[in-house]
Length: 185
Image 1 (cartoon, rainbow, N blue to C red):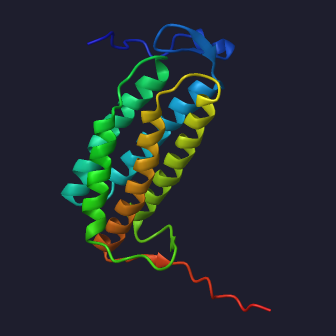
Image 2: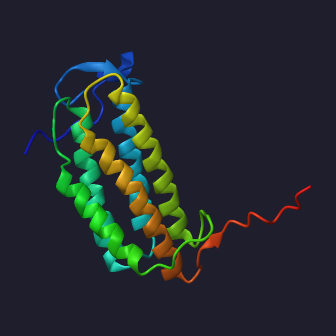
């Protein structure tokens, strides 16, 4: 395996740049850094879900997702690298279908909530959507494999379904949006 960090600070980023995985230096606010930085933030948000009480099947899926996101971050950090593949997306779709099969059909929108784990999962879902937007922004400037966007798109759907599962597992249940709560003139 590659070099391990023995010294955490290098001072090389003090000028507002950072090194990509291929050694090139770019601005810390570049579209590429924003994309993989948001993927890293998403990975941390999923870690917050895993810090809560969750069932073994959810824990297994989300731990695998964390590994996938680390790979995706590496792919985005090293231009031209391919680490997320179609099989990863198919796995997400299969998992999503499996979890969704046991849920009742939705007839209303759900408010984020339903217990701590579910709320954290909803937060991860919104960060996932932001990561997807950041990657799409990057695709307008540089070449990015379609699998990166597809993975994040499918993952946000999976996180929504897992949030529903977690709300039910916790006993809190889902909080439905009451669109008729206001009097209409």
